[in-house]
Image (cartoon, rainbow, N blue to C red; front, top):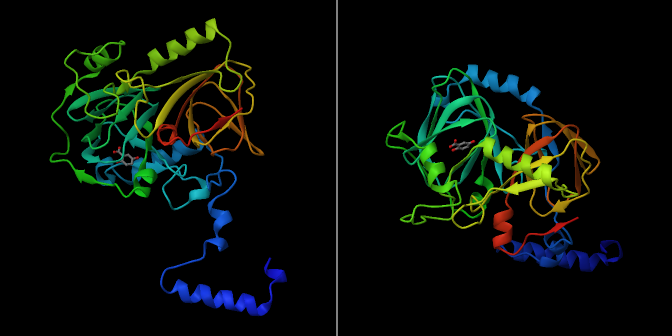
Length: 346
Ligand code: GTQ
């Protein structure tokens, strides 16, 4: 356009933009097509973090700083398209947290919601508002918004989990609050049997009153999830795109387990060759069992246990499995659905 523009007109426009710009005013027509795009224009890129590369660095971090000193000893997984922003997708944060035997990560609370997905070890705990759960590989654990939480590892093994938080989303909305706990570790009782008994059996205590949208069940043990997927895989055909896939729910409402982060577990049967899929929620995957590939854009991300990878919004991808593969995943789907923005295509 500017090639055919008369130099005098171009100069007049420029001078106009400069004058109004000094008062914080700008012409829409110069930016419109970058703002309102035909399809999502995410800065998020596909990427794979291999466990075999991460594990030595996690151990090195363990030698360099204590959990107490760091407050949270986490290596942040930064999307290559979002460097410097502590983001794995445009709306979500992810990191690998290490807690060594005998360590404590002190209590704090924040308005950001957090999930833990356990990658390595067993026997460390997280305490949420005075209730403590011990975690094992494959468990999904929720820390609801504004609940005090500390982590500790009384076991004799290192424990590593994937943290997923809605940090960038809460930042976008300027709704961040955070405070340290009155004590480093909370007075707690172990609760997991009790929590699962109350909310993990398609029943709830009659006196239960919800305090928010987050699931009152905050520990989803892997053995139950894995068994469910195994039974489904015996009795039915896999979906052409996603195999056998379950979403974690709040058992009281039937809705998402967390208000801002959708969480899923899926089984891809051995030999599975998924059809192309895309959705507007950029998705973080963590492999639990088996191995396979995600073909996304012109890349092939080959995953095995404990690898983490990300599929950006609206970019078509296909999932493949060698042996039975189990994948945990999370995204901002609940937020998009609440706002009538979510789309998928396959
Ligand atoms: O465990 O509370 O990865 O507050 C980042 C911020 C973990 C946590 C993270 C956090 C936490």
